[in-house]
Amino acid sequence: MFRRLQSWLLAGILEELSQIRHNQNQIMSAISEFKAKQDAFNVAQAAAIDLLVTSTAGVATDVQALKDKIDELQNSPGEITPEDQAILDQLVTDGTALAARAQATADALKALDEQTPPTVPA
Image (cartoon, rainbow, N blue to C red; front, side):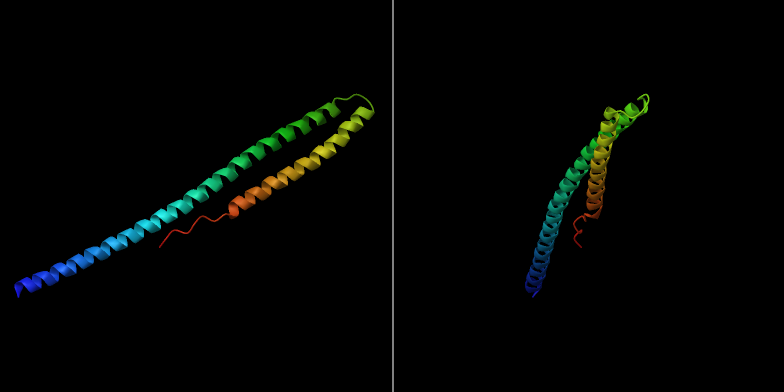
């Protein structure tokens, strides 16, 4: 009788250990899947941030170019010359392009902000 009880207990313990191993494998699998999703999200975020940094540097260069043209106009003596008018026309064109780039940067920043990381497994 003692051996039967011992065998029954041992079988129960082995079944519990098997269940624990199974649960551990499921948890590890969920963690691995989440890590892969998080890694992909992080790569996408890093790429978007790199693009924003590049865009921001480009906008800063454009702003400086516009400032330089304005300085050139302000230092021009006398009446508006045809050259001055050409600079004014170019300022309008460059300002419009800069506004478009600034809006694209704002849109990219909004899109980056709206990205949702993967849900942590429960």
